[in-house]
Structure formats: C-alpha cells, structure tokens
Length: 166
Image (tube, rainbow, N blue to C red; front, side):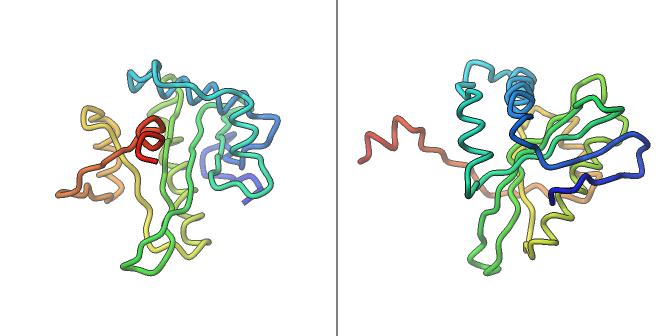
C-alpha cells in the first residue's frame, strides 16, 4: 500500500500519506468541512493528525492524490467488521477532490484504489455515508453501482455524551 498507484490518467498518482503530509491532511479536512457546511465542527490539529495517522499502530489511514505533482484530493478510511459476513470491511470516512479538479475522473480513480485495498485486505464490503443533500456525490456513487442502505439510521454519541454516560 505504500507504493504510488499509477492510474490511466496521465500525471495522476495516488499514494499513502506520509508524516510530512500531515499539513495536507489537515487542509483537506478543513476543505471538506467547508464543503459540507461543517467548518465549525473541525477541532483537529496537526498534532492530532500526527498522533492518529502516523503512530506505531494506526487505526485510520489516508491516501493523497496528486495531479501534475499538486495535491488535489484525499481519502480517509479504516477497517470495520461485519459479524454477518465474519469479515472486515473498509469504511470510507472521507473522500474529497478540490472543486477545480472534479469531473476529471480523480474521485473515481481514488474510489477504485480503495476497492483494490479492500480486496487486498479480504474485505467483504466497503461502506460510507453521504449527506442527503449532496446530490452530485450520490449520483456519482450510484453510477458505480453503489447501493444506498434503506431502513438504517446512523446514531452518534459525542465525546461529551460518552463522558456523561461513564
């Protein structure tokens, strides 16, 4: 997974993020939060990025895509588990391509890179969430034969609530 992935798109490369790219990860986190109208929720710092993504045994991973040597997107993912399948799955937390680089196949190439990683890791599925108003993303995912899960509601306990419950 450490080696760059060469795609069919000239001058486009996807590679595992390195510790020297922590600032890019934070920038892309802020960019996607702005796009999703959630900038007020970003509390991540460079130190958080270093400790989370680049520790001895990370539980979360990042790939960064480059076009003509410019960072144009990122994807953050981790492995979850399905008891029904008795297999791990790849959970895509975030996939983001800078607006000026959308529509060039970069997002699709990144998603396909992640499907390769899922297969290499013997995953039984790959999942992600999308905001219900994000029609371009929904249509893009459907064009790849991804199916929305009906009948499921996402629940969340925040860090504050976790502390209150314990």
